[in-house]
Image (cartoon, rainbow, N blue to C red; front, side, top):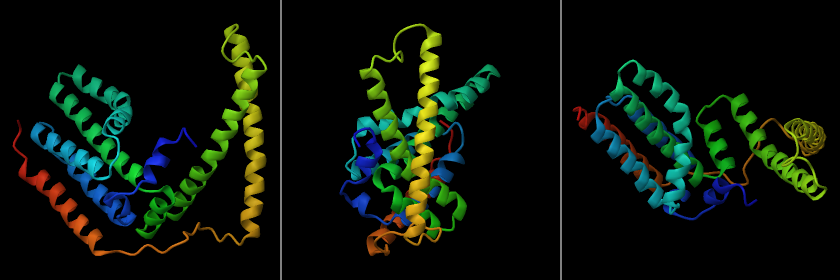
Length: 242
């Protein structure tokens, strides 16, 4: 589906894509902890963390501009808390909050863009993440495509019939949108029932299994050692405030 950019990116072929998902999750956790616990005024460390994430993007052969732009989606949310700090006179804290959130978002986006979602969720389950949470995310991921595709089909059909979704009084547009949302919910519920019956008929046991069993290789151990050394090194070596 053309609208899911991350899904297309995650199906790429690079050294980073071929790494075991469990190793990439552990490396990301170390990276996030290092970023979160870095001194707020250590700007050289923030620049080094951003460079580390950018090097991962380049190694994964992902579009750098697209990754940098999509990581900025977190800034409007963190800007709210940064504004509170700025109003209290802590401008350095506000700036570091934005830097930490952006560096963290870039790291998370790198993991999502270089790992297929089924492999990522299976690795999370293997690492001991709550089973209920993993199962909910698995179903959310699978149903998201169905619901989004159905919504696009309904939107195209409505526009072809001269729907008031884009023109007319606000009240009429609101009524048209609310009606379309109700129909979408009903159709999604119907599809969910059909999918649930099909899964039960195929012997669904509460876990979605992969077609292969991932195994750790030497390159995974090397990557984890390098990533851990880089994150920990940046955290403890670049601790002098700029």
